[in-house]
Length: 189
Image 1 (cartoon, one colour):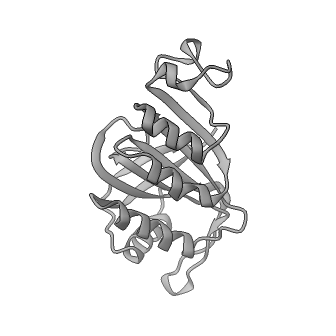
Image 2: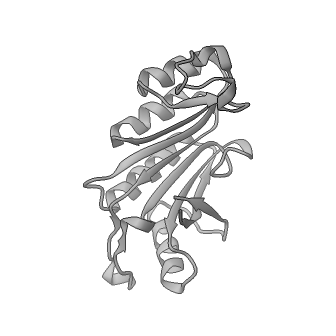
């Protein structure tokens, strides 16, 4: 397993603004074979029902651990709230309905892109799928929903560590009206 450097490029209290930024970044990225992954902690029956309607066959387990209830065991998630949700490899069109279903619950939505394209005018070369990701955290200030908040943060992922990657982060932030403030998290891929 490898990691990428997830750089926060926009934090906002406005979910529509965060979604607009994600759409802009998706328009920049190569998304021909892209897919989206979801992580969340669902706390209420209403949110659970909405999320299950958006993501049939959802993979989940009890917050206390799989041995206390899981989709793998065929349990009903409503009996085990709060539940952790981990769902992978969904089509891109599932992202916004999932986000709308969340209400106040925290989540991370990660788009697995085909590439960040080259940007010759900015001196940026193509970045392959291995390090081309985009994450939106909803109602959380971190990738893993440990710092709950009313804010939403857009992260761009790169290899990290060199000047070209830092230049890409700054360039992508500028495209969405954000600013890279130096906040970087290590993201498990």
